[in-house]
Image (cartoon, rainbow, N blue to C red; front, side):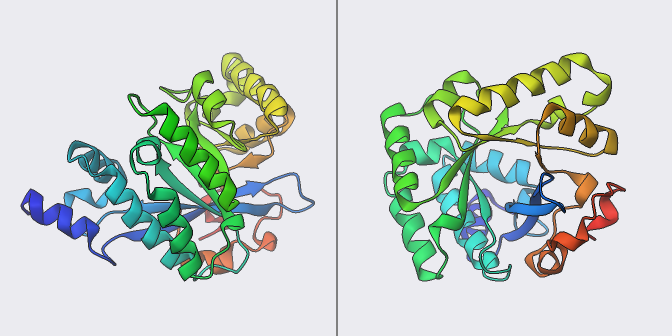
Length: 264
């Protein structure tokens, strides 16, 4: 497939598929979905089907902002098939917010046209490597908040998801990268980092989300640290909207962390 044809295929309406994975609140009497993170898959049968390749290709072609808009359209279309009122997490590149001056207006219009309240939206800031226009980035974040969306900072602890980005974003959610979660029950240093992030979140009025939870022992360690929002294969694989409709009921998680089969 030629490169020109591939980018056209990516931007074609209906070519992207959307899966959802719940962020669970383990503090409730019974674990319940706090929000659903939307995860994009590229056009089937192409090298861009894998999301890592899709977004790397978009970056190399300087099409991140345009691809982000296409992803938003696909996600909001799919979101019409999940239970009304469910909070939705969408990933947006920091560079798109900084360089695409019309992105916030576009997002507001896309939500309105589908009858989706922006109060349901959690914008997860991803791939925030510099350089980008800090002034425009701040203005975009302010615009998202005026819409009523909440802000999450993804991959906290790795790369450019550092203290500077925390100060710039002042997020409602700090999503701790899976590197610090994997094996935390047997690694003092990982536990120390997790505890420090949980403590840091307090003054920001933020909540911590632990990504990549795969073992019951990891979940128990997170509980002891005080982290209550979790996401990972322990609670199920990402699934299309039709499957999530039946799987996000609180009764699907009885508090027994027995493995990925809980949602599939």
